[in-house]
Image (cartoon, rainbow, N blue to C red; front, side):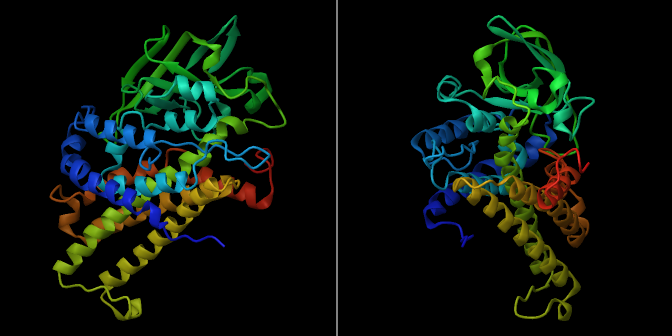
Length: 403
């Protein structure tokens, strides 16, 4: 049986993450929402603190990886409860500000990719590196198997060519984990991920995007033109296994999708708490001992939103628990991402509505949270793609059979 109550040993970590969110993130949230593309320098000291926590084995609010056990059942470096702790810490941090969490040095999605699939030598070599993740292309959105960027082996180096868009922390990060194909004629099995460090000739940051939400986080367009990368920077194995497909690079999503779900849960909880405060000030009491249909309409709506939140929360904890216990969690990761992504959009928009004129102004953060929420339903696989993945898993269909 799965116990979905947060473990007591995570209590101190959750409290620390909450305090950081309340004391560091919340006070500067509106400042960097308005100052798009300005780097939040306040994060530098906090990032150094997180590095210390991660180095000591405490972790909990940064990038981690899903490292599967060997056949003999050994953990292969996966700390018991590590993924669940990271999810719980992420929820608290995003209660403060999701864009600022995405702006944290050395806590990017590329770091999660390295932690998931890098070998021991690479883990040591890339330690301390801030890595972004570059997957999406101008002609390739949610279908990550359709990427056109190429990587050709030339001696001891791979030559990368292609363009990537919507790269979170693409300008600020020290390196980028780039998805590219070794041989496009062999389909998705030939897709591999490469660590490309800033300053590498042929690697260019083309521009930064102006966005609806998460404005404190930079989102870049990157171009690779005859960019030469050491072959040792390929994550995973260079062999093309058509039977296995691109499970190696996709393993990253088993970890990042629950993290994105956790981000959504943090934002949703922030909106619910603020709305509860506003309703209480207006004299609307939410009574958990009475049927919703016998209460004030605003209270009934709030109860419905809270139930939606709880469902997403429990799904997310389950997917992280499965990763910690070396159980295949691809289905549950997609379920958590789909549920939380949809719920956070519904919840934040409804909270804006319940707050009336206060919800639509910049006097409160409700309108900002409603803007931030939408990307959480889109990146790391859109709502529609998550539903497609869930359908394939439940029906036992291959991607070619169910599109």
